[in-house]
Image (cartoon, rainbow, N blue to C red; front, top):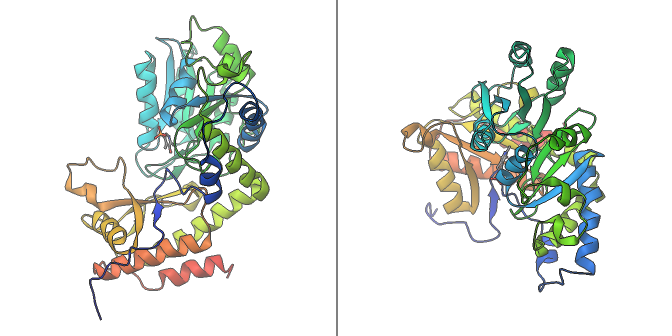
Length: 402
Ligand SMILES: *Cc1c(COP(=O)(O)O)cnc(C)c1O
């Protein structure tokens, strides 16, 4: 037997939590010469995106499109609603909560962060305590990350709405659904979310470059009280343009519009409820495999309670140097790229090499998940990482419905 030949030729698979796998149909839809940006198909296509995006977010509110990544949507949501000196409350359950707070700080907001660590969801009682103490209602928004992609913690957004309602606190409820939209169940209006931010490169299956802010009338009322909003971030002309260019405050993201149109068609053909159920079943297969591996080895799911786990991304702890070694091995030998751990340890800390993440968002199916798990099994075998036996079988049983 030849131990050291690489088996990485063939179609590569990047199983990182964003950017996600781009469907061939989306790539093909984008592969075209520059279209007219003043009239015709592109204008109609753009208009057609709005109701379909809103349907994925489950809102009858307004939609503003930005040419930018998730950080742009973070900034856009705040630039329209939070004036310098106003306060925001951030229940952080991983790196991304802190990231959104940083953006708020940069815009001159006062930030109050409640840090729930790197493996636990937020605790609604502690958030309630902070809001109860704010008798002057100086907190103008709660910045809630639905799924924190660094920890793979999924938070209970409706519980946060109940806390605000029970206390009669008027703060806006803003949700970051960048990782979760089109993967984990999310229902903006039914859950009482005032502002939702998301990006196109995760559950929406399009290359990075577009992001979206959905907002309701309560958020628009807060927008109306703002002393000023930068022209570029202002969501009013983007959501209600008088001229086509105002959708984007400039040139349209031409190829992205075609790609997103195609991706939304795919989501609507499958049905959003089915999309959520598919992600849930695939995630359960991953968790089943990880439970078996972890029964006799160092690999552990970062989030203990399945109720608090995202169905889009899975953060794993495996101990240094196994995380980096496994990622390197599967990429070099199998053409399978696993995600780095994020926010768990500083990059210059040896512990940094003890984490990894699996992205399973968007265009993923059963055979892709089995390939990831089988590839990890091969890597752990090659690297002599201790593990329980039967992990791939356990995942197969989940997919078989057994
Ligand atoms: C990916 C992600 C972001 C950041 O998006 P960028 O496109 O990298 O700017 C923010 N929040 C969450 C939850 C994410 O998953």
